Image (cartoon, rainbow, N blue to C red):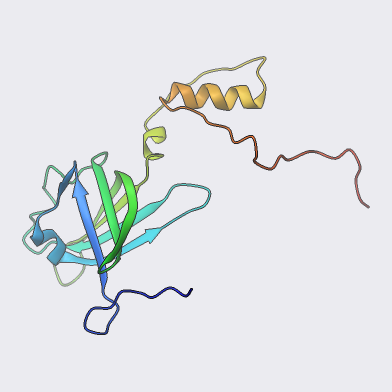
Length: 161
């Protein structure tokens, strides 16, 4: 059965919701959003970029919009919204274009952002690669689950010409 996208007044209408520290943001933030982009990466961090203007300089100094703040973003179409990202603000860029209205670009990253917060140096010896990965993941406060049905990469001793 083909996908039937939700329509509002006969048009596809994009929709998104932003939650900071568990609470939905103020309406005035939504009014200033110029662009929102979601990147779902198969291998690597999922990212959301939020571009918003800040003519009154309200959000530049907002204590809720800081690196490391918990953020949840839902998006899609009106009446067809899904969770895009549940993670953290990983970067905040501010640009001052010629028109004088600051542009804030908020980069949000999934839970893998927490792995970037560790700055530990360690030496591991007499470990297999699997043991090393498991140790590093556990030291980061995560639990490693291995799918026994996942395809395995095997090195062949034969080489083709």
